[in-house]
Image (tube, rainbow, N blue to C red; front, side, top):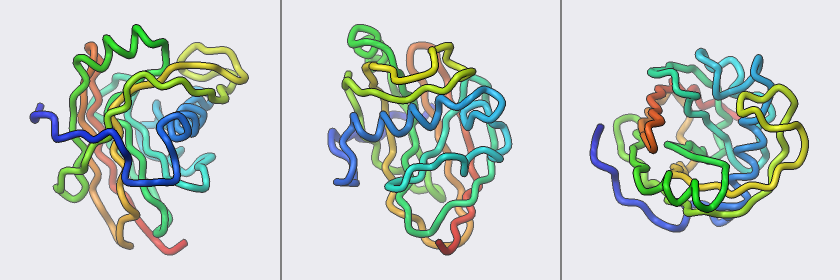
Length: 180
């Protein structure tokens, strides 16, 4: 694993604060197991239920490595978690002590945003892979995230590698960025 690149406390998008983007990401990632983007090994579910402000990408549920292909609108920034957790303050503090990783877009290292324990609320769906009940969930989230400005039209390779508390992520995307 490469050394952790520099992190910053602010994202490259002024549109969403950490509580807001974590709420959107965890709502998106809490879809039923049969159509969940986290357990998707091909990318067929990457377009499902995307929010308006940003295009969300998924890590994995522990199976590694994962390769996916995903079509992305040309005008949306990307949000890719390297490693993340929705739990409580104490668990986030422990998790973040070992959090490290990198995101590469076409071989170029992307700046990571380090998010310490942040309260947020998200919508979980029945049958999600995390074992949470369906409905509004109040949680505390943390992690390393990459905010990536909207890539140019065409094909791109995005690599997400990270680890924290024994959780390993190794995902490679072929992104096909097209006109909106």
